[in-house]
Amino acid sequence: MNSDGNEEILAKRAQQGDREAFNELYDLYIDKVFNRVKSKVPPQYVEDVTQEVFIAVLRSLHRFEHRSRFSTWLYTIVNRQIADFYRNRQRTHTDQAVDLDNVEHLLFDPAFSEYGEERGLVQKAFATLPEHYQDVILLRFADGLTFADIAEERNQTLEAVKSLYRRAIQALRDEMGV
Amino acid sequence: MQENRKLDNELADFTDKLLAGETTQASSDIEDLARVVTHLHDLIEPAAKPSAEFRARLAQRLDQEWDQLQADRARSNAERVRSNAEGVRPAPKTVPHRSRTGSWSTIGGWRRNRLTRLASMAAAIAIVAIGALLLIGPESPPAQGSANGALSVPVIVGIAVVAGVGLVLFWLSQRGKS
Image (tube, rainbow over all chains, first blue to last red; front, side, top):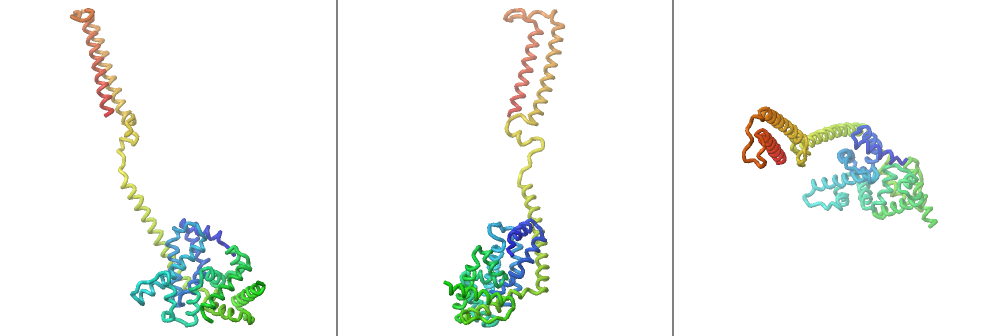
């Protein structure tokens, strides 16, 4: 399941101008990126933001220095594009200065939510979780990794990952107030 | 500790079954957590993939972006090469870089050849002149007022010619150094 070695090679080839290598990376990540975006963005904007993510990846690929995994670098771009989306949305609704650190939280306000209240509530609670909790949930739901895969990915035992997952869900429950 | 591990495994199993599309009933121990997982599943359903239409549209958009980027990079590389070429003052064709160190070089060689030719010419003139004077020498009157009183005119002329050639060579060598 862990194909990072292959992804690093594909990324290098894409940086050298190999379009086929970039297409392979696109095929590998389109579903994962789409699902990650879907976890934080209203459904009607998911395709637009996903497109912006891949365009940003293409434009900045030459700056990827292979100091981290390709997936880590890619998900940083996903998060940045999601933040940009909310920053732009905020600008169209108000002329006030935007607090970039809290932009996602501001925009998960129910008044801003343009779709189901329950879904908005889950998104809002999810966005407030610490990063390592969000990460384990996204790896299981958005990336579709099994708990064993996640353990391998994070270099942890299966028990540790399951424990982390339960604590993440408990934190989400507490945030949602259910 | 054991209790937590039991909850970890139960919640992980519930999640696995839910994501696999199996209907499952959560135990009362994890009922509230299972409800959160169900909400999360509604928000981020891994099976929900981007539509084929969106994939095709995005792939086409990325192809355009790729072509544009390659064209931009080729243009900027060409501009860089051109500006580099214009930025450096080309060295004169007849004066290679190392001639500026002051040592003899190609141009020095040219000068040296010229000097050799001049010296050869001067030496030839001197030999002819001395020869001619030697031929008419015996009939010439002895030079008056010389130190030994025995020097003939041809000898004096010969010495003058050699001295003249030496002066010319010295002058040319000084000119070459400046």
